[in-house]
Image 1 (cartoon, one colour):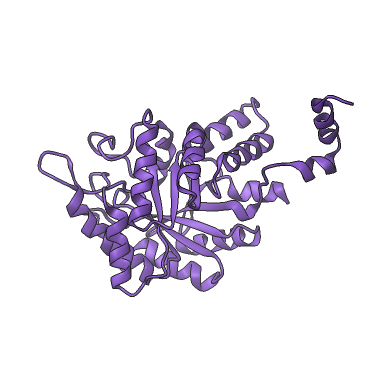
Image 2 (cartoon, helix red, strand yellow; image 1 turned 90 degrees about the vertical axis):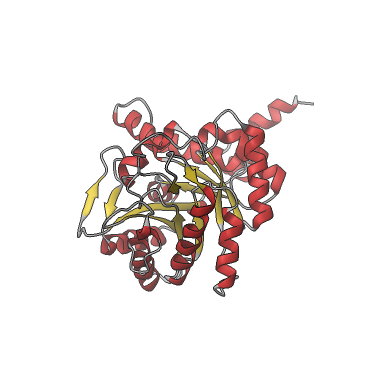
Length: 324
């Protein structure tokens, strides 16, 4: 009688059998592709820290979304760079704002593609924080909720299929759910950034979205990377308030929390493979230190294995091509 490990080795030795017994699958249908749409440009603007990712005009965003759909990617996630910024971030809820205009254009050209709109004020405020600022420099949580609710309704009216609040204000999922329901949008889902950490891995994103805070940092409302139990509690609160999908961000340094939160909530779970994770792999591959294709597919598979149903990744288009 052969030892059990011998039997496992025989299964791994044959390519076709490896596929049959593989525990975790990866396909383009697991991905969401993030895009940066900028007001007032008519071209692609390369993002230095994120090779192959550009700031896009609305027309280029439509083309980029079409490419994603043709690769089998079911959804895009939109971030907006507005024409102007102010203290409250009023461009976020402007019905003619950049995300609203891009959403309409993408849905008109690609009606079957799911458009998810990131909901936060940091890209729209002159100070770069995610909410209304008090005189002492802190964020006014409750005053911010009203502005987030206005933005959610505006994005949904523009055609957004899913609203994704990333601000990390307390009570925002309940406030958005109420606002959407009051506007007759009871079927618009909320994908909550439930466990969003105050991470060093966001640096390239802040360059891409021009959203670095002008003073201080976001540790007052984003989560401490050392706190796992708090992440589980925060996610439970979002579920109780009406979140339809929950998220862990970043992904790779937090695989343990992807696993814990999926097991705890049994909710659909997204993991955000963030800009810093993307940029590190790109830099290492460019230097010849890593095989980019093998590294990316391994990383995305492991995010799925940890428990993510959805993987938001800047590698989505490349990975989709490789998987073909």
